[in-house]
Image (cartoon, rainbow, N blue to C red; front, side, top):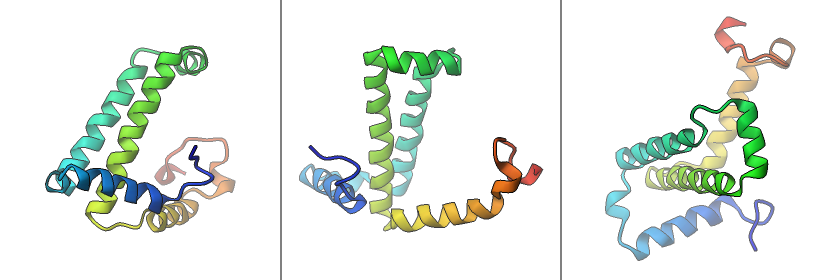
Length: 123
């Protein structure tokens, strides 16, 4: 079985392209529609946690198999649509993630941010 340790982003992006192309869905995979789909799926993920405390969520994810399965399904939808968007607009995901982390290292230096959730412009 595949895992994060054995599967590349390229593999996943190609898997999604193949799935899309087998169904002739490229016509629907434009940036606007994929961005909307990401937002909708993210909202569905949030709905799973509605009215629960962080502690309730943490405990439920350990004990409630159905909740864990639902979280996995919504997260998979978000990731799939995100990778589909990257495919649609020709974005190298590894490059942009590394660039974002580099930017965030500057905005959130360890000595000022360790252990705090303060936004960079309030440091």
